[in-house]
Length: 394
Ligand code: CTP
Image 1: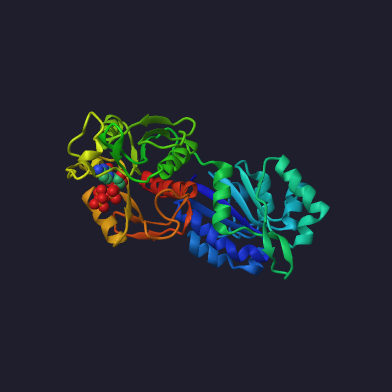
Image 2: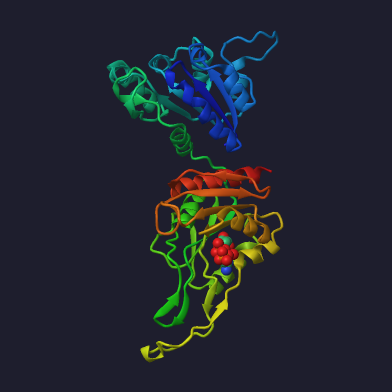
């Protein structure tokens, strides 16, 4: 997605929309804001202008003579229109096909997907006129997001609250399912590796593979051609993803290297075992040997090897740390020649192995650190793709 039009109408929830605009901007998407005159009573066009770097339009008619018809010009190359908040008044106009302001006119002229975020008092939201307008808009293909429950600006409790900007951002993205990775070859590694000691024992770690599998699913949904090299997990490969199953770090290395040359991006989410038993017994080691000393050998560092041969590929590494997380991760980014590293502190609640959530920081080549709030790994996968999509465009 390259360009989104955000239409703001006159409800109190308009105060949350600058944050929504910022989320699109940070994903490298050009944001054009259009407001109704009522919206401009709640929040100033200057706020949006400053955040988006684009002029904000409220009036239907420009003051320059010879200007092209404004709604046609604004809609050029738009991939998505998001109307947030959508008041009962604007929903009514949209349902009836009225075009008495710039935003309503744009909606009628738009040929891109339209996402609508109704937000109003609970009784207005339940009114049969509003209910049937929303149903009609849905039938016509608008993606309408349910409002949240909670305390409303008018003081009553109920349904009608505008959802949080990040939830709207994700809803909009899912509704459109941006194909920003269309046709791009991507390699993802996931899960642990297992380093056998004998036929019944191995060295490994608690990785479930969820982060890597989530990345593979998100990439495939966004149009990428995905090869997923995974150590042992209980997860099933997302539809359309080519799964290569491996056990040991050596097998993972081989699988990764054989696909490396054709791939544009590599996400190295696997928790590769750094060591393997130096000796590998063909028969089960009997317990009489319990006091033996286990000699370990180092495994190849796959990502280090990829980084030495980087070319114009985008390399994304992961680091799970227990101390000095940012410093250690930044050192890994530099040593392994990465574009981004996603780091989490295993000691933080909700982060790390075998949980559905993660709280990470993303570090780029300039050393800039972005702190990401705790979120589901599925959602985090899309956020990571948003960040690499910006690198792809460079
Ligand atoms: N990695 C790899 N091959 C290895 C070890 C790690 O490709 N043998 C990759 C991981 O997939 C991850 C990144 O390197 O993307 C960092 O892994 P991590 O285990 O955190 O770092 P190490 O370099 O192994 O350093 P240490 O274990 O000492 O923290």
